[in-house]
Length: 208
Ligand SMILES: [Zn+2]
Image (cartoon, rainbow, N blue to C red; front, side):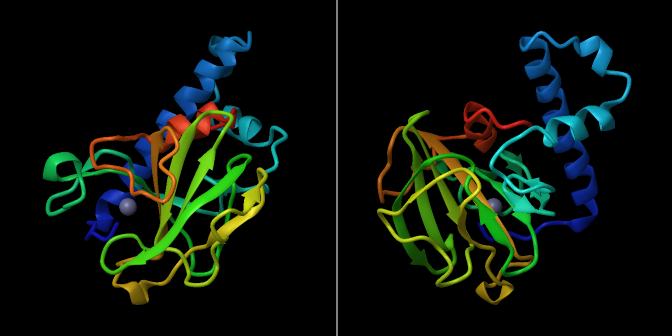
């Protein structure tokens, strides 16, 4: 979604989100029988090892975007933001910034169930469905013409679309991820029905 961000807080937000992701990695490691205590002394190494695990996603991707950076986290309070539940001002999605035209890679196997354009909201968007976890995700602010059409199936690592342009009125080029349980088809996910996109990411078995 479009909103103005104080870029002075971005490094802090990035740090928080990456710390949360690493904490999640540790939790997954514990579940798999790996000692979290053993991994804890070097968090950087732990994260590097986790992202190097075999998946269909290219190396050096962050939320499916090569060299992407988290610009705004899910449910972050943003004064003036208008797309939250019941009109509140929390950011209901996850923003990953990258240069215009950067590929956005599929998080898992699924199908495109919706696509469209709205001025001032998602701009060019697609909606994808993951049958294995019964969850839907919307990708907004895409480069016009880059996105897969409705009905197209994809596998993990395939290209969904490319990051769009600031000509849409954004303060930085990025993809906005929004997620929900169930198959929403081409209908927009309701403002109170979304979940943290990380739930999709982790449900698909992807390492943080
Ligand atoms: Zn956003």
